[in-house]
Image (cartoon, helix red, strand yellow):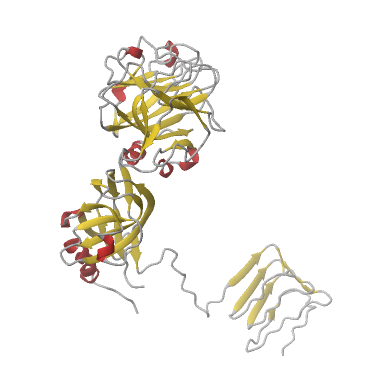
Length: 124
Length: 358
């Protein structure tokens, strides 16, 4: 007896990010709310549009959302970035949080957000 | 954060342990020139004890065959104490001139150097050759040549320095440097330079070959190959608000499949322990096969139970073929609780063991 899922089911989750996450932020700690991610913990930010995301088959299985590199962002606060988050500013939602290698930032520095991915695997 | 020199000072550092002046090496750093600057101002210098090999980065302006102060000149060792960048020993690859070092903006510079022992070395007499060079991530093969004029050689004594050459003839630099890194025994590849140009930490590229790395992000101390600084003139300052691009990369995430997905284990799948043409013996610390069917198959081998050895505590099958099966005194009995009717299958041999059923 096998298990299977239609791509549309997995894409459904990933499309929420593609269509709604209009800001990517670097944070000094793991944010647990939109207010934290877009406020006290935010060190740098980059605007995002749907074209910054790409849906494709997963590396292992399932489906993958690739988040494009964003260069030219400017650090708005000083601190050590160790998390990256995707925000829905219209709905004030914290959509996704991931980690990043600790990076010290100072106000005014140019920051590049490197590319990364979110992948949802097929059922096992 | 970057190290700021104001034409009044710089730093020298002892060469890290393991420095090999004959090896290939690569350098990466960010440079930002102030509006003012003098011809020949030294930005980074690496020099061996004998003053014969190393590299110098300095402003142009007629020095070393360049034409403008905004030229960045890279000269490598000639194998002697003169003619760095201009000697015939370089085989035409002793110098690179990168035009347009901007004032007020950072430019990344990366280059690789062939050591005199390299297989593709086409110079002579222990000189070095520039292999590749990039500015802002763009390869500039046409910038490599050997010019008529050379770069004056640093003073005696192995060192590397930032913002100056040495204490006797410093040539202080007016500007900023950051992310200075040297890899020994490695030539940077284009994709590595691209990653560094985007702001990646130098330790993300061939960390095993990294001989020194001074990011100047927070302090002068080096992340790799830290040797105490010797202040020359007024030294320099770490400016927090000035730094080249930094790379922040979110970690990719996988849902529904762990990084170390467990193997589906099936209890009924008996692990097989097979030994062929060898001596298979249980030692005192041999694990007990517990909890599942076990099959011990020995072909053409001697199977010997010794005292205190492990025993098959569960239903199992011990099959031996064409071999001797001997049980020494005090050997543990093969205890097989349960259903197996066939404990020992022995062909053509003398069986001296007795299997006991509970």
